[in-house]
Image (cartoon, rainbow, N blue to C red; front, side, top):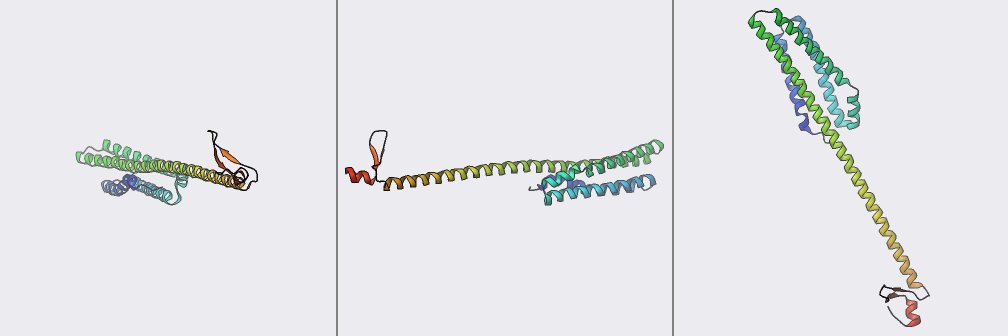
Length: 212
Protein backbone atom coordinates (compact mmCIF):
# COMPACT_ATOMS: atom_id res chain seq x y z
CA UNK A 1 0.00 0.00 0.00
CA UNK A 2 0.89 3.65 0.47
CA UNK A 3 3.27 3.26 3.46
CA UNK A 4 2.03 6.16 5.59
CA UNK A 5 5.16 7.94 6.86
CA UNK A 6 3.60 9.54 9.94
CA UNK A 7 3.12 6.13 11.54
CA UNK A 8 6.89 5.65 11.40
CA UNK A 9 7.63 8.84 13.34
CA UNK A 10 7.79 7.07 16.76
CA UNK A 11 10.12 4.50 15.19
CA UNK A 12 12.40 7.21 13.77
CA UNK A 13 12.37 9.15 17.05
CA UNK A 14 13.22 6.04 19.07
CA UNK A 15 16.03 5.09 16.70
CA UNK A 16 17.63 8.51 17.03
CA UNK A 17 17.26 8.64 20.83
CA UNK A 18 18.62 5.16 21.56
CA UNK A 19 22.17 5.93 20.43
CA UNK A 20 22.51 8.88 22.80
CA UNK A 21 21.03 6.91 25.69
CA UNK A 22 23.50 4.10 25.17
CA UNK A 23 26.43 6.53 25.14
CA UNK A 24 25.17 8.08 28.40
CA UNK A 25 24.96 4.63 29.97
CA UNK A 26 28.49 3.79 28.88
CA UNK A 27 29.83 6.97 30.47
CA UNK A 28 27.97 6.25 33.72
CA UNK A 29 29.22 2.66 33.80
CA UNK A 30 32.85 3.46 33.04
CA UNK A 31 33.94 2.08 36.45
CA UNK A 32 31.93 -1.16 36.27
CA UNK A 33 33.37 -3.88 33.99
CA UNK A 34 30.36 -6.17 34.54
CA UNK A 35 27.87 -3.54 33.47
CA UNK A 36 30.06 -2.49 30.54
CA UNK A 37 29.95 -6.07 29.30
CA UNK A 38 26.19 -6.17 29.83
CA UNK A 39 25.85 -2.91 27.92
CA UNK A 40 27.90 -4.31 25.03
CA UNK A 41 25.48 -7.24 24.80
CA UNK A 42 22.53 -4.87 24.95
CA UNK A 43 23.97 -2.66 22.20
CA UNK A 44 24.24 -5.69 19.94
CA UNK A 45 20.60 -6.54 20.62
CA UNK A 46 19.62 -2.95 19.86
CA UNK A 47 21.47 -3.10 16.54
CA UNK A 48 19.78 -6.38 15.68
CA UNK A 49 16.33 -5.00 16.54
CA UNK A 50 16.82 -1.85 14.49
CA UNK A 51 18.09 -3.94 11.55
CA UNK A 52 15.03 -6.19 11.77
CA UNK A 53 12.73 -3.19 11.98
CA UNK A 54 14.37 -1.60 8.94
CA UNK A 55 14.09 -4.90 7.08
CA UNK A 56 10.39 -5.09 7.99
CA UNK A 57 9.72 -1.63 6.57
CA UNK A 58 11.62 -2.45 3.37
CA UNK A 59 9.82 -5.78 3.02
CA UNK A 60 6.45 -4.02 3.29
CA UNK A 61 7.51 -1.35 0.81
CA UNK A 62 9.02 -3.72 -1.77
CA UNK A 63 7.36 -7.13 -1.36
CA UNK A 64 3.91 -6.21 -0.02
CA UNK A 65 1.70 -7.17 2.92
CA UNK A 66 1.85 -10.97 2.51
CA UNK A 67 5.64 -11.07 2.73
CA UNK A 68 5.49 -8.72 5.73
CA UNK A 69 3.06 -11.05 7.53
CA UNK A 70 5.39 -13.98 6.92
CA UNK A 71 8.33 -11.94 8.21
CA UNK A 72 6.47 -11.05 11.41
CA UNK A 73 5.24 -14.62 11.87
CA UNK A 74 8.85 -15.85 11.83
CA UNK A 75 9.23 -14.26 15.29
CA UNK A 76 12.79 -12.98 14.93
CA UNK A 77 11.86 -9.56 16.26
CA UNK A 78 10.12 -11.01 19.31
CA UNK A 79 13.14 -13.14 20.19
CA UNK A 80 15.46 -10.12 20.06
CA UNK A 81 13.07 -8.01 22.13
CA UNK A 82 12.75 -10.77 24.74
CA UNK A 83 16.54 -10.95 24.99
CA UNK A 84 16.75 -7.15 25.24
CA UNK A 85 14.19 -7.09 28.06
CA UNK A 86 16.14 -9.77 29.91
CA UNK A 87 19.37 -7.81 29.45
CA UNK A 88 17.75 -4.61 30.71
CA UNK A 89 16.23 -6.43 33.68
CA UNK A 90 19.64 -7.90 34.51
CA UNK A 91 21.30 -4.50 34.34
CA UNK A 92 18.64 -2.95 36.57
CA UNK A 93 19.08 -5.78 39.05
CA UNK A 94 22.85 -5.29 39.05
CA UNK A 95 22.49 -1.57 39.60
CA UNK A 96 20.05 -2.19 42.43
CA UNK A 97 22.58 -4.54 44.03
CA UNK A 98 25.30 -1.93 43.70
CA UNK A 99 23.03 0.72 45.19
CA UNK A 100 22.55 -1.43 48.28
CA UNK A 101 26.33 -1.85 48.65
CA UNK A 102 27.28 1.78 48.27
CA UNK A 103 26.78 4.25 51.10
CA UNK A 104 28.10 7.41 49.55
CA UNK A 105 25.29 9.75 48.53
CA UNK A 106 27.11 10.91 45.42
CA UNK A 107 27.64 7.38 44.19
CA UNK A 108 24.07 6.55 45.03
CA UNK A 109 22.87 9.46 42.93
CA UNK A 110 25.03 8.39 40.03
CA UNK A 111 23.67 4.84 40.09
CA UNK A 112 20.16 6.19 40.32
CA UNK A 113 20.85 8.18 37.18
CA UNK A 114 21.95 4.93 35.49
CA UNK A 115 18.68 3.24 36.43
CA UNK A 116 16.66 6.18 35.15
CA UNK A 117 18.61 6.16 31.92
CA UNK A 118 17.97 2.43 31.51
CA UNK A 119 14.28 2.99 32.15
CA UNK A 120 14.31 5.80 29.58
CA UNK A 121 16.00 3.43 27.15
CA UNK A 122 13.19 0.96 27.74
CA UNK A 123 10.70 3.74 27.06
CA UNK A 124 12.50 4.52 23.81
CA UNK A 125 12.16 0.86 22.86
CA UNK A 126 8.46 1.07 23.68
CA UNK A 127 8.11 4.15 21.49
CA UNK A 128 10.02 2.38 18.77
CA UNK A 129 7.69 -0.64 18.86
CA UNK A 130 4.53 1.45 19.16
CA UNK A 131 5.39 3.11 15.87
CA UNK A 132 5.64 -0.28 14.20
CA UNK A 133 2.35 -1.48 15.67
CA UNK A 134 0.52 1.63 14.41
CA UNK A 135 2.19 1.39 11.02
CA UNK A 136 1.39 -2.31 10.69
CA UNK A 137 -2.27 -1.89 11.70
CA UNK A 138 -2.75 1.01 9.30
CA UNK A 139 -1.32 -1.02 6.44
CA UNK A 140 -3.68 -3.92 7.23
CA UNK A 141 -6.67 -1.55 7.29
CA UNK A 142 -5.70 0.09 4.00
CA UNK A 143 -5.10 -3.31 2.39
CA UNK A 144 -8.59 -4.45 3.43
CA UNK A 145 -10.17 -1.28 2.02
CA UNK A 146 -8.28 -1.70 -1.24
CA UNK A 147 -9.46 -5.32 -1.59
CA UNK A 148 -13.06 -4.25 -0.95
CA UNK A 149 -12.79 -1.45 -3.52
CA UNK A 150 -11.37 -3.83 -6.10
CA UNK A 151 -14.23 -6.24 -5.45
CA UNK A 152 -16.82 -3.47 -5.82
CA UNK A 153 -15.20 -2.29 -9.06
CA UNK A 154 -15.15 -5.82 -10.49
CA UNK A 155 -18.82 -6.31 -9.56
CA UNK A 156 -19.77 -3.01 -11.18
CA UNK A 157 -17.83 -3.88 -14.34
CA UNK A 158 -19.47 -7.32 -14.50
CA UNK A 159 -22.95 -5.77 -14.09
CA UNK A 160 -22.17 -3.24 -16.83
CA UNK A 161 -20.94 -6.01 -19.13
CA UNK A 162 -24.17 -7.96 -18.54
CA UNK A 163 -26.24 -4.86 -19.27
CA UNK A 164 -24.36 -4.20 -22.52
CA UNK A 165 -24.78 -7.83 -23.58
CA UNK A 166 -28.51 -7.72 -22.81
CA UNK A 167 -28.90 -4.46 -24.77
CA UNK A 168 -27.11 -5.95 -27.76
CA UNK A 169 -29.31 -9.03 -27.58
CA UNK A 170 -32.45 -6.85 -27.57
CA UNK A 171 -31.15 -4.82 -30.49
CA UNK A 172 -30.38 -7.97 -32.45
CA UNK A 173 -33.82 -9.41 -31.76
CA UNK A 174 -35.42 -6.10 -32.80
CA UNK A 175 -33.50 -6.08 -36.08
CA UNK A 176 -34.50 -9.68 -36.80
CA UNK A 177 -38.16 -8.90 -36.02
CA UNK A 178 -38.13 -5.80 -38.25
CA UNK A 179 -36.57 -7.73 -41.09
CA UNK A 180 -39.14 -10.53 -40.78
CA UNK A 181 -41.93 -7.97 -40.50
CA UNK A 182 -40.79 -6.11 -43.61
CA UNK A 183 -40.17 -9.00 -46.02
CA UNK A 184 -42.95 -11.37 -44.90
CA UNK A 185 -45.59 -12.24 -47.57
CA UNK A 186 -48.35 -12.65 -44.99
CA UNK A 187 -50.23 -9.71 -43.63
CA UNK A 188 -48.62 -8.72 -40.35
CA UNK A 189 -49.62 -5.96 -37.96
CA UNK A 190 -48.90 -4.72 -34.49
CA UNK A 191 -51.96 -3.80 -32.41
CA UNK A 192 -52.05 -1.96 -29.12
CA UNK A 193 -54.14 -2.70 -26.05
CA UNK A 194 -56.63 -0.11 -27.31
CA UNK A 195 -57.51 -2.32 -30.30
CA UNK A 196 -55.87 -0.12 -32.93
CA UNK A 197 -53.06 -1.17 -35.20
CA UNK A 198 -49.84 0.62 -34.43
CA UNK A 199 -47.98 -0.67 -37.46
CA UNK A 200 -48.61 -2.93 -40.50
CA UNK A 201 -46.18 -4.52 -42.92
CA UNK A 202 -45.99 -3.88 -46.69
CA UNK A 203 -48.07 -7.02 -47.48
CA UNK A 204 -50.89 -5.65 -45.35
CA UNK A 205 -50.81 -2.41 -47.27
CA UNK A 206 -50.55 -4.16 -50.64
CA UNK A 207 -53.46 -6.58 -50.09
CA UNK A 208 -55.93 -4.42 -48.14
CA UNK A 209 -54.82 -1.02 -49.17
CA UNK A 210 -54.34 0.20 -45.57
CA UNK A 211 -51.21 2.05 -44.83
CA UNK A 212 -49.46 2.37 -41.50
